[in-house]
Length: 281
Length: 281
Image (cartoon, rainbow over all chains, first blue to last red):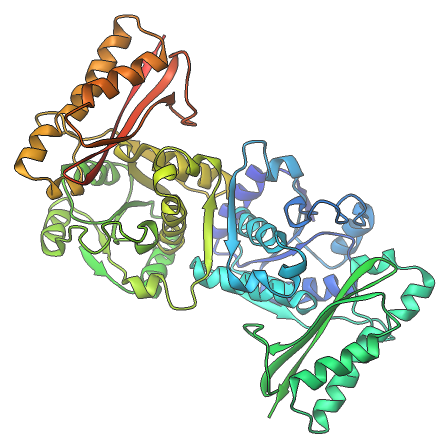
């Protein structure tokens, strides 16, 4: 596995692979890798000739007061894990190479980025879209792989790929969960032992919603209430509960078709997100 | 010369050229071609294996009340001219293919896009950057050619290419002028016969500034005043006169180094821009 820090070197290498007609697959990450990331990497390994994993904790997707500084970083462990998965290139650019002092052009997603996560983190998806486009241009992937855990992110990225005519296929991988159902997230490491236990309420609430729908409930309002009720008293604060069309994340009144149920809440001051995707007849 | 309207076909063709290791050169235009455009095309012919000229009157760079509807369109003449220049591909996408109903992602240039043209056309460079990035992704050029006539546009595009790590070389071509010095522009066709005569004041004012600097003047303020004085009474309204560093377009106090003198003004209600670039010791 080659570890590359230089943007120029990464781009030259990508161009060389393209000339050799190699299929490049990119897995963009912020490091602190867990089994969820490794599921993405394993899919990448199956889909492409060259697997590139990027690790870059992207400052532009954190707002002031968010957890940029304390975001978990485990470079040595990450490297070991990726090597074991047969990754070809670990791309770890420096922040001041990605954002030099005179950096001043952003990719700005529209309406989709103003709702749900975007309502609580107004510049988040601008940062995500910008860095992902930069990584695409540096790594020149044929395929890029994202986790469904960050569902709105995948919708924003798909919108960007379509709107900007990027010749890249986006592949989404289902969320990997811990034994008790909690979605794996690098941010779970912020939780206290008590908080970690209380966090089980999140997948439990989503599961309860899924069961209610399976038993015939079709009112999105009732499902949102059910989830809020299940979280009440367990989590400190619920940012949102959404029952939406899966591909556009527009809120539903009646539940039918491909549906995403997603939520964000805080436990111990730690902000956690989760979602489930259902097909409903 | 192949004429291509389909985005998918253009992108597939570009990918095929890339596989054959052909060097693609793109000349993005809005049509109504004149000798200025043809100078760009001739340079493209020298630089690349495959010359692609795009003709697309880009709605997103026109504000409401600007001249989108009346912008000159001469598709038959354009086609004939490009064929004669040995262009390989004329790419003429439809507006609703470039901007489908659900289009909602823009490339937003920063501070550079707020000044000069940007101060008078606040969404102009957002539209320019977005469509140019889309054309880049559709045509996959190694080189793209722009005219210095739209100097701020070239600065915005260069900033975008650097900020988004696009593997594309930007080449700028000096402004082509009519016999009397007026910069060629598709918008010159809007001028009345009288207006066309009065428009000579624009290159004359720039030339006067150049001569004043050659004779030793180094005060940017004095040069701006000189130009305004020369235009006074001849043009209806001066939007701005700028004496700026050539690569960043930041205004200068003392004239030295690579300097761009640019202006925008109105004659007969027609908005015209022009500039000269000087090296000053």
